[in-house]
Length: 382
Image (cartoon, rainbow, N blue to C red; front, side):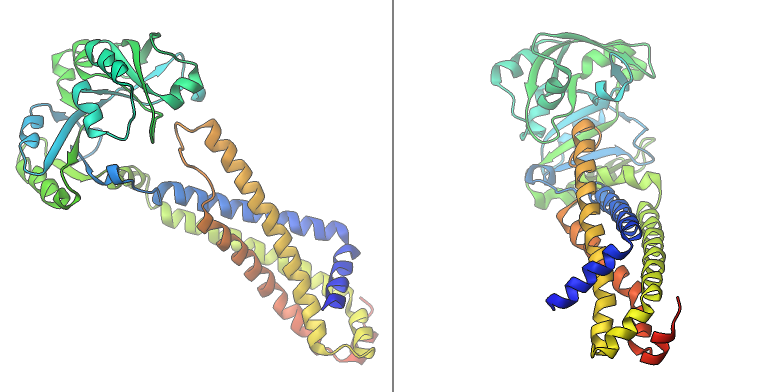
């Protein structure tokens, strides 16, 4: 076995440029596959925490861009199984400028109920009191504060994108916890700025359940209550609500599968061409090996081993490149792609695919070389 690997390594170095280019080609392909797995994991495999499982989100049935009347709130709160409830409005605006490094989500909420519905957010009691008391108060996540250098007492202005209202806000609290890249301010302040005609409607209601067993009954009760109204609702789990945005893009899974298939096919063609050229160049040498007593199985192992080594080296470089790039993206754009990385379950398929491609592409050249008669091999002139 040691002799076989020595010969395999010598064969790779025989045409170092071609071997390196093939390894680089495989590594780029693995990097692209790993990126697809990263995107898939970020979109579809986000872990649902215990608190998230207790939350339902009620939005307009037609689209999340449609609004709901604020009076729905009291009727939803009266449903059996609802523990707490907060009305929430997404505010389309930006801080300083529209550069990605200065962007973070802004939501207008009811301050008294916010941290009851999101108990996983940790905020100092004195800061929470200050946030509730100040009508222009704002609370931001720690990741936002650290990234933008914002601190308590700082006064900032959000510039509205779809409205002429530019909220002037005082940072009264900084919270920590999962998804602490958000910010919240008083919904009444937004209503005053937009006017009663536009400010009295809300984007969604976030419901916290008493028990996970109440999820089905509460969601059905809410939607049935407003089924025949001008603004029907759709109530779903927090995770399902997030997936609704993905579905609006289209059939993302089919799109990712199509790209992945094209990448694998390209890898197969490149590897097959490389191995075929390598075997053709060494036909006479294979004949000499057989003359010296090497069985056909050894010749087969040499060719397959060369393809396997090229695949493994390409896979290692590709996976390392994917991990590095996704870490950089996740660090630079945490507010947009939180948790974006190559998942553990995506590493093994990357290696499995590249190995399968290497073995499949070398199967035919290896079989031909192993079965070629010694006389024909020695007569081969390249």
